[in-house]
Image 1 (tube, rainbow, N blue to C red):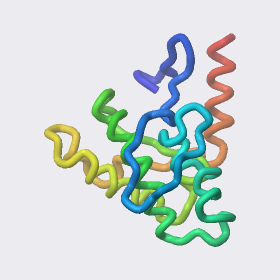
Image 2: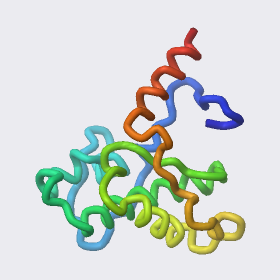
Image 3: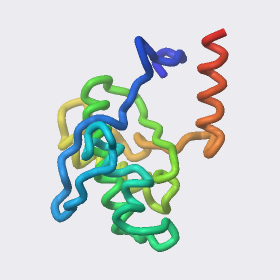
Image 4: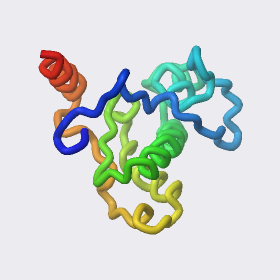
Length: 146
């Protein structure tokens, strides 16, 4: 969203295909059929399930890995767009402690860069509508299409 409007061009924004660097010790090649080890290929629910099995057994190490990859992708977005706030939803973001870890990881990724690295805690938020956010977004797109 920018200025209260959905942002779009010839397609839809695809943050999930931003390139990320492998985190030390993670030998997984990636799940994305197009890029392998892009953000989606490394940190999506299915990519995490490939490495760690069913969600029920995931502990803090999985949250840390996923948040660290997402922080890499967000770094590119923050440097490019300089948003006032970042809202991250989806299945992986519902893991306990994910947003707190992501906030810290993003701060590390931004590395104190002037004007971008000094965000206060709460710069990364969960969607206000929770699980209904995706549906609300679809309705906005449909309304826009008219």
